[in-house]
Image 1: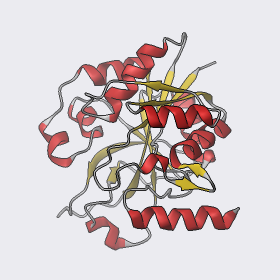
Image 2: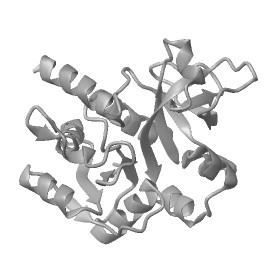
Image 3: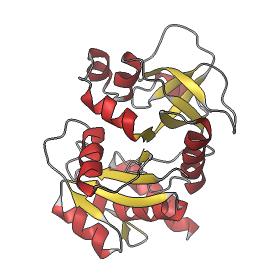
Image 4: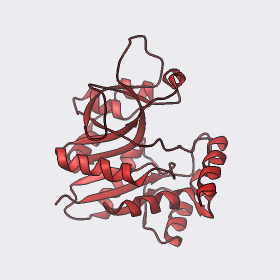
Length: 246
């Protein structure tokens, strides 16, 4: 049986909304809300990887587990890899990288991604949702993924490309990418050993490093679209939604 480790990278110094991990929703910080969602998914041990003592303390005080990492990382995946090595948990097969700023992510989507990775013996997987507003395709703040075939609730299709900017070619299968990743330990180690590519740096998308180096990425269809907290407006919107539900 495959063993999964869930790691959540988090830091205080976000460009557009500094300190966002500790903003409160239902009297609980965003990062601790994400931790509890990951725990509810029950696919493996959950640990927050952070460079900030404030985040570490908040997670621990709310009953979670956290690890302090270096401040020098270029990407969230670098932080994930350091945490994995420092934790030294044996017999891990899959590492699931869950974004620390999506507190309303559906736990069923987390479970489904993990299940599809195991079922298909995939190396690298992530999620995408349907785009119901075509204006999002031209929105550079929305990451899109193009897939080989149309996604459905049970398939796990390879990604052809990821992009932010408007593209001229008319593709059929374009979806809204969701920043949750699952990789085998071997794939993560290979990915970390590779230099950042020009494509990755220009588009500010880590996953392009994988495609540029012939590492295939499978895409699963998400049943919902979590709201990422990048701005004050995002925070107020998701706070209203989540507090209304309770």
